[in-house]
Image (tube, rainbow, N blue to C red; front, side, top):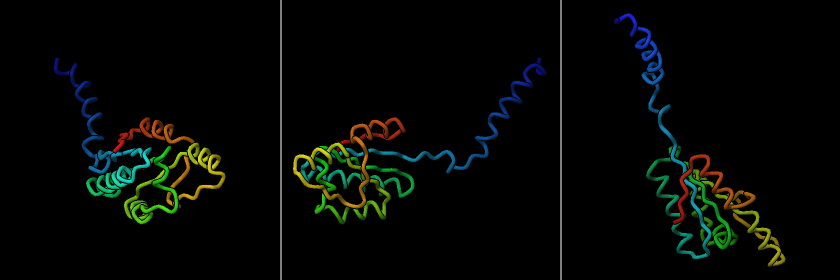
Length: 146
């Protein structure tokens, strides 16, 4: 009877070998967070920047991916001139925080105001802020609305 179980134990041993030699880095998952800002309130905008900073401070640069997605009235966070320009630059350059803005919001604002919007250089366009969040959640990001 022991001979019948030998192939089972051998297969189990072979399956375990990759896990035995895996490094801590191989098994460490990067935390991914999508922060939504869709509010014009400077207090809420300050909070979203603080949450991004706190996440990177907690997990460490390289151990967390943070993207702030601005749409609707929240686009004022990224609109030049902005009182948050220095914080945005610091978060992007030293902490790796990404900034996205909703192109639908930009287009409708430009049409309503009759002039082009000027946004901070750290921000990148996405077709739709809401769709960007849905896509990020589908990639394993946690969605937070501070």
